[in-house]
Image (tube, rainbow, N blue to C red; front, side, top):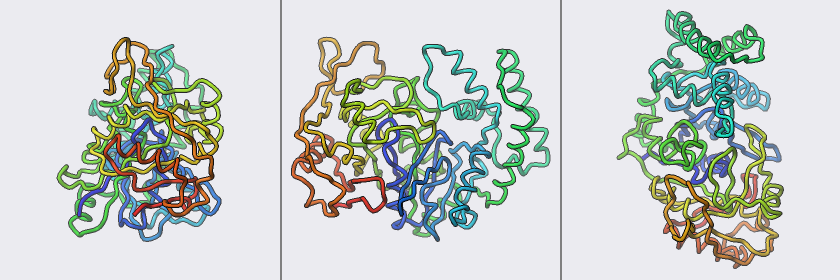
Length: 423
């Protein structure tokens, strides 16, 4: 049995949470492999919206194992709030959620350092969610990080005090005032550790490989999106982890030859939160309409998302980097009443036309568009792909032909029931 990987092919917010929830019945294990509570995976069923930040999106399915892998960074306070929210609606996550001992912990000081560094960037701000993600991964790379297993160590408080002193010295040196009651914040953080200790802490690399050896079906769930990858995204306007398929190998401890299907999620248009290049961004009424009809506001920050047309240059780049075997198209229903829809097929940079996603964007990019007629029909009323309007099927066929990758699932609305799986 191979590890299947599901990830986003744009700048995040592609609808991964819903699709993981839809696919979970076909899997035995769902495992998050990177990122932290800067992720916001939204699921909707029975008329209720649920937002997960750290916990895998398979948690609502009884008898399915969910794993937070070693590549994830965890804020105990955020995690505690997620657990409490789940328990309030009758979900018992203690029964089916396992946590890697090697996952790193976000300290309150990490969030303050995040805010300090963002403030220092001035006009070059990345648009951080200020959740402490970057500084936590920085400490991990610097080999001074604080891991889940450290909670269990006899010298836990000594280790905690060492990293706390290092952080506070940095904050004091930069005259940064967190404007919070420090003692209360840290007491809340330490108390939240007790919630983590309610769960089974595991050597997740052994567990995941054991499940695969036992012919159990495992789905790796990515956070953020390919174009926010620390290596291959639009650096420096990226996240602090590897969001691409290769990140699932290091984030779960699985060898590359043990990977199977690579399922890429692509929104029928593009959105981006925070700063950074966005070639197809729309600043007109169409962009505002996409935002309004798509409810494009960050599930983690509440910030309005920047909106634009689908970008095939960026999409084909993401498909290449990840080795995508199939795609899921989400939110085409947002454009149900559009008369004309556009797809960017190339970039004009100066006097040159290119279909390559550039490493450095130091000049204006003019998107080259292909226009499509809108379908002017409500997609969510149909449950069979063949009954969808011809204009929409032409739109899908063009994306498939241009990328060479089939679209296996079409999401026609936010609820898990509003999903068409193609034969």
